[in-house]
Image 1 (tube, rainbow, N blue to C red):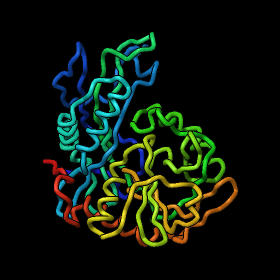
Image 2: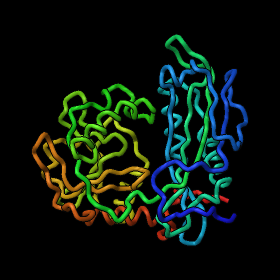
Image 3: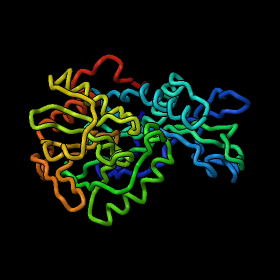
Length: 341
């Protein structure tokens, strides 16, 4: 399929309408067969469960053009699995993982003209989501739901090169110990908006959230997991029941162990350990890894030895290896890459 006439090099991280999206409706206890449509609007009751009680969950992943010209996506089965878990927690019907993967592949294939070419730095962002669609006025789960997938081409996360960011330790809490921090629900992101705007107003790029119970352990930011490298070269990620199980983080841990031969572990990371870390990054779908150069804890600066100019050496190896796998330059583990069309 001929590519759209888009200035790929100057795309931002913003929504651009594409030709097709996937829609399936849940009614009378079952999902319909679903399919592609061209209408990008959603029509629901003014009293819909999603509008009244925030009953919505979502996912985010990307499709790429590889070095040899194939269109692929990265581990969509894990996104489908995570959406299943998110739906269960909000008393929503499960959209089965296998159907989720089919819907993602079908939507990307239909919009293949919008998948940026290899080497442009741009990708096709894929957003599957589900919400309560029928009228609900009492506080209870909806009876009807809609599952949708749309796509949008987005530019490289780092325009002009990767520069380490400065984050602050925030006084806001992201999630309660037995709350919804471990699922990808819209409500978790809504409550983080004030904190991130406040951080930006104070001159910081992001927030570091601590555990709400003791405020001594590192959890995550509003939209990414942390990854640290110790001074003896060990890769460490925080372990907590109230942070999102990031697919990028899990993949980076595997890459660290199996591709780079590094020691890597998931464990509780304490705030007072940060001064002894050599490198820090935020990992997620959008950037893969955003390097952190400085952490500010209520006026006390923790400057990472990796500095404010570029990624630390181990973080860079992790980034280069994982993006190499995604783009087809490095052989992927079995089952990680799904080829489309």
